[in-house]
Length: 354
Image (tube, rainbow, N blue to C red; front, side):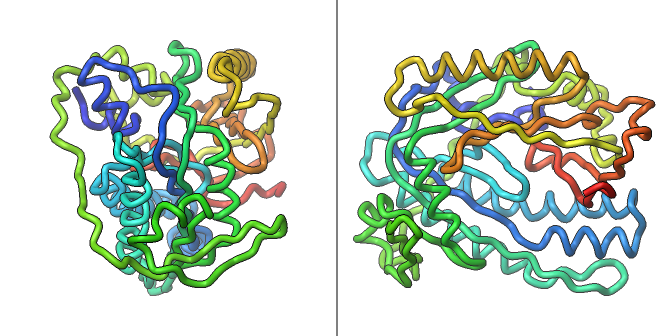
């Protein structure tokens, strides 16, 4: 099994597939959200110095280095990367039948990720500009629903949902650069191992706490070696967009740094009770499959699904990773590239029309 293809699956999914089992639809643990700041000024500097195409290629290299470092820390504490949204990542740390274990590992990973960001505090571009990257992180603990949705013929998507994710998003809104902030549910579970810092009160009265440090060492728990020979390649194929899978199979991964015209569409939807409706997974799956069908009709691509405190969002793209000869007529000139470490497309400059 090609490790480049497995990178598109959350780590816990990989291990479950190798063991021939499914992940439960209900889980208990902690969610970690990390948001990177500074990619926009870095993009602007690289495009200014190197031009749009070369700048996009260099940006991809920088982004992959950053996320390689962060994902290494997530995996070192047995976390799984579930979703990307813009320059942010959502991860899951399961309790593994030990209450509070997921929260401990999540906060330890968050501090380790902040330490890893020190290497990117002053990035020197090829022509001498200096750009600083930083990160803010949030942790929430509790139950979640875990869903696998989407048409396997198009692409399946892993999603976690529920009130714990809403609390995570609310905590992230209160965080500042360089901080690790805890939702109230995580504060309770981490009282014995985390030194509380400043308190932040949200508009709705909820109080969040900055984690000032760890009172006790939290042992790392790296994922064990994975026997990739036990993973069905056909099952892995369903996690990748057809255009990406074909190119990677042909050894054409470098195309993923091409500069392409593109149009982005963000869609918000609501109406699914992720916590208390037993049919929530089936409803979400049916909806995502319907959206995929509509988007495919117009030759677009459903890229991301994200669920948080403001509702559920779908990110749809027209132009990447597909390319059409008439794209230039759309009037947009966005710089889009594929982040190998992130398994997602993202914009590296703004549209002229925006």
